[in-house]
Image 1 (tube, rainbow, N blue to C red):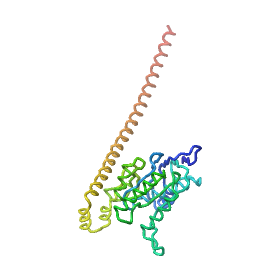
Image 2: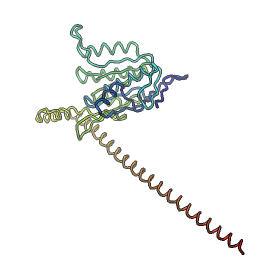
Image 3: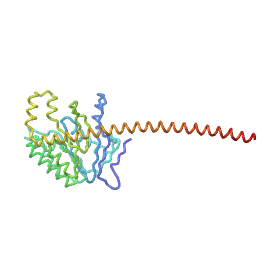
Image 4: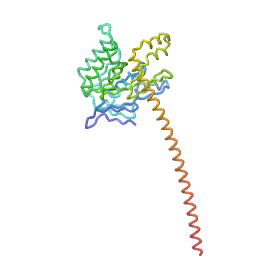
Length: 301
């Protein structure tokens, strides 16, 4: 059953989504008999920005589209595909998603993004959901990252609820250092070099571009040379992010182990409880039998 509370007497600005699915993607995956990986996240008055990073084709854009679609469905009083959804009342849902370059209008990809973002900046306020795909891309990486930070800061200062996807390490650091922002990663399976499409809130994502290029069959000497040419600072950041994901994986394994132990303890507790109950019944039956025998004995006397 879906718990949906988009409208309340006292307007709240929290956004809580549990196990959400994109309805169109869910339908396609069901027909293909593929697993459906739901997403969950939570934002509130203090944390208004979710920055999603991770590998290409990992599900970043789908996650953002799902969020925007659910918000619109809730405002149209359409049941949303979640186990639980609490969404604020919004005036606008504004998005810059996809490549809007145009030969006819002489627009490059970067120019199209800038135009869209400027249009969003002109109307966005604290009652707006802003969706920004590949923020700071299609230009010089350092300038693009600086521009992306400035854009996120603008929406943060205006209180807009903002979702953005990125590959820039500087934006991941911004989300880590800014109380109003939260990092989120699309999980990547290192053993199979395949995305799992799980959204991990609280961790920056790994782009894994070189690993994916190697998996796709790019000449190994080229990939090896690229690894050698990585900026030491970028390599250090990638190593730190990888260690964070490894730590999380170990903690999840430990948590799974604790859950299994708890399950075994619960089974043992239930068995001991049943045994104690049976022994108690047996003892009481025996005592009742002895009492009846004693009473009959005294009555006979």
